[in-house]
Length: 515
Image 1 (cartoon, rainbow, N blue to C red):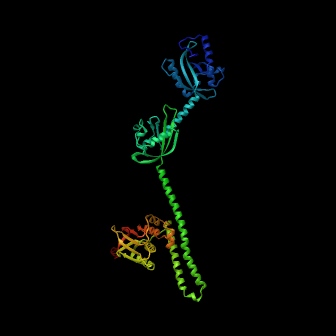
Image 2 (image 1 turned 30 degrees about the vertical axis):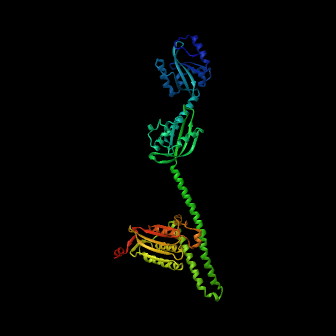
Image 3 (image 1 turned 90 degrees about the vertical axis):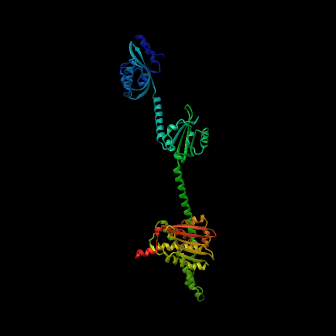
């Protein structure tokens, strides 16, 4: 190379001066070292050090003052080995200390030579600080990518776009799909058995031929154990390498989707509840006003003596109408209050062993007059041996609500029957069956839901709060039983209340315990 010293030539003083002048004019830094002494440094070296070109004091420094302390041992060892004729790298990198105390990275090419007849080392130095900084940033970026690649919970898959051969996968991929790494690398992506839809991967790759990346693509993938789970896929093409690569990542969103569906169901249920409650209040405004108007109207007639003595004979009839309207109004208010207790979780039950027969017979008597007036035949078949562990008030309301509903929704000439019988598992079944208008399966599910049973057309044709069945379901649940409803439109309805074996005892056993 022009300007380099010939290691096999003994140079005269004139030769050294000529060489020095030649080396001083090249842009590459040149330093001549003999032991720890600096014999020569060209102008480029002074610029690297941040010194003036004529600052010859730099030549008075020992070589160790030029080199960063952390690199000094390595440089000295290489110097000793080179001067001893051993085989050492020709090119290496180290840090050069500048006058202001900062340092720069340099690349050095070294060779043995003769300088003024003395064996020495000639080094050719180039500033590579910017290159080192770029290299360090690339290494940091590479290390960061490796860390993310290895610790992220999302699966990552790196493969060739040319032949779809897998280059690398992260631990999350192996865990999610249940593969060993040596069984994945070198295989085609289409052979991994992860695609629940066979044509999905081909369409995915075709899309990437027209775009550099794809984001948030939904996909159903077959994971460990053959379980299908839902993912969101992200992919980016990597160019600028020997062959185009594709980095694919996948985030498991199965649980998120389930949670979102559950939230939507909860939101829909809340909206439905609000709508049905609003409809309930709208219908109740009619149900409450009707008896109130009757009470106010008839009481005003009596108070003001309208019609004089001619109508005085009708006052007892007016008083009876007021009583009926007040009773009806009280029934509606009680239903509303009971349901409010149920929804607030404040419904209480005083459980004791009781004889259900007197309670059920009372319910029959209370609806008997209404059934006769509606020309409905009402009957009962009760097992007098059954004793229940229940709350008497709740049992009465269950029987009364079921019988009232049956009579209310059965046309003239129909039948209503009340039955209490043992069941095969040692429990008891209280049922009310009618030959009324009946319900469809959808209407049954609506009728059992609090407030959901309200139907505008039925509310107008059959007076009442319409809360009887939801209250029955709530009361039975409080007593530890279950409710079953069988119904067919135009045929009739059977509502059965099942009490478990631990809620049932028999009269003979109860009497024996008392004795």
